[in-house]
Image 1 (cartoon, helix red, strand yellow):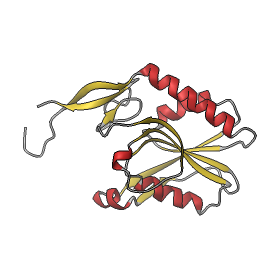
Image 2 (cartoon, rainbow, N blue to C red):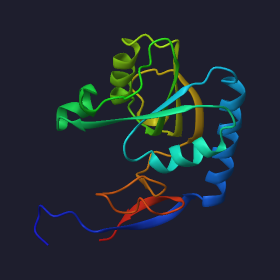
Image 3 (tube, one colour):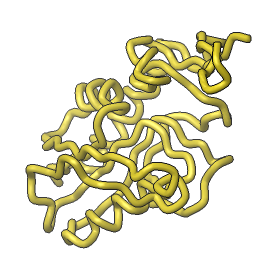
Image 4 (cartoon, rainbow, N blue to C red):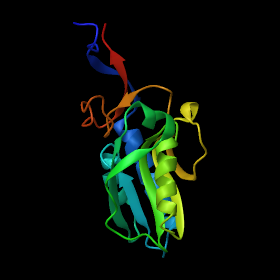
Length: 182
């Protein structure tokens, strides 16, 4: 292995089981259904890490919703420090005057999400809140309007349930810590 190659990754301990995820997503769906009753919210997510969470969450919501997606690309190292990204797929549904709930898989520093929320706020939604599966408060740099949290995340790199390491491990039905092999 050359010095520029990363060692291969493997799965470490399971942090959140498939059953724990299923139960918590069901609870979040019930809370959202209660809080947005009669409001017909638009759920917005960024492709592609949150897709498993979004699919399960929308099936647990008992009220009418609309669903839309954004896709972004990062500008390299600077995006990690500023949160500035390039939108590669914008929303198809107008959100002006609508209740919008941003669905996230993981929130760490919050910089990218803050950037996206500011962009969406300029479109004048009636309300704009966040629902995240995983909340990594240890890395947070900015405050965000997080209304729903699935789990407080340990400060570890997790894979599974849509989260990947170099596009691997998304398919796992649970969330596990990534363990690098020597």
